[in-house]
Image (tube, rainbow, N blue to C red):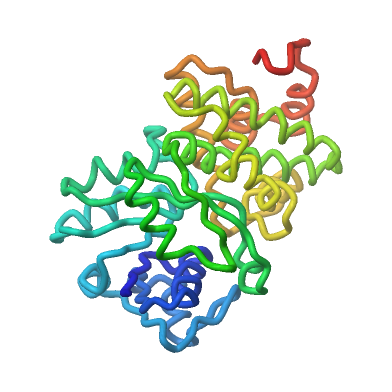
Length: 321
């Protein structure tokens, strides 16, 4: 079948590589003038992978939209609304979209599927993909597992049938709220993990994982989702790929941040932390890790002092708050 991938960075180019591996006819779109698409058009490769010659490339959004009824979107979360509004100018009858980003809209705290629904005023199918995995591992043949979710079980099963393989086992999700919040929040916890690495406090990452999952489960529940999603593939399952891997942008950002070093790659947690705090305040949910990271990354607070304080908070029951 024909598949279009909108986005050509690390994860977008992987989605194209992977969809082609699954036997589909793939067209990749990138914005004209953006280095990512220019490099792919010039060499058919980037620093992560080499695309098969059968994968086509374009900077023409008309061509990309018309190529397929199944469209994968893999761009910066903060750019989704603008792209979705552009997409809404096309006839999208029968189109199905799969969102492969893990984030929340910074200014509103809204989930990405909600951003899509607000921007596309047509009856399209919208699903999300979440879970652990890095391009470098998958392209080396190391298998993994992820979860597909939507508010339409038939669409979820369709995506699983189209993209499930021996390389990535796809599970059928049943909690869109929990899946999206869990996937976005793990990037925030990833920032903290990198900071702990930078200070040589690696042993604290176990506590960070446990308390981070508890924090996120409270938010998911308050939003009407299933708090157990925080302990599934979308969140706790994705921790290893974020908190411990050398390939994680969010972990790397946190580590370099506390060392005073620059980091020029996309770390979605930097934006998502603002959205998390916004949601927590709207819903009255205590999110101490998110608040600490907001103070550190955006308000100039001392990282070591903020993180140390997190682990010296007043005594609480483990599953109370």
